[in-house]
Length: 132
Ligand SMILES: NC(=O)c1ccc[n+]([C@@H]2O[C@H](COP(=O)([O-])OP(=O)(O)OC[C@H]3O[C@@H](n4cnc5c(N)ncnc54)[C@H](O)[C@@H]3O)[C@@H](O)[C@H]2O)c1
Image (cartoon, rainbow, N blue to C red; front, side):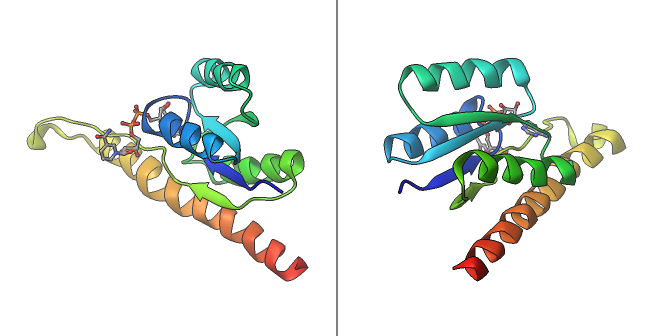
């Protein structure tokens, strides 16, 4: 049976490239992004190439969204094998101009997002392992 991978932030950029590589390697891939319009476009492009994909919209900085992402994956594909914490943002501005708002958002997405994604993946990996 082919393996299943989630790639967060895979509607564009590096995440899309990672997702395409995994599809070509025979994975079923869950495309995921906060940008729903771009996500839908990418899902359509991948389906045209006959890749086995679904799209799930979500924000990695929200713990519930990350657990929902894993739940949707298991509901659709039966299991999860790989979780790629790709989604991330940057704020390039002169050091003295970095605002509290910018810094908080960076940490919410780049730090909290990775922790919540890893938690959601670990939760399902443990359940799959104990089921055998
Ligand atoms: N491109 C580089 O040179 C480079 C270098 C080092 C690290 N990175 C990291 O690699 C990752 C991908 O980089 P990229 O250049 O492809 O970025 P990108 O901005 O082109 O793509 C990131 C994708 O993540 C999505 N995204 C943003 N916030 C999100 C959120 N809260 N929840 C879900 N999706 C969200 C965006 O909509 C976008 O589709 C990022 O984490 C980035 O920090 C990139």
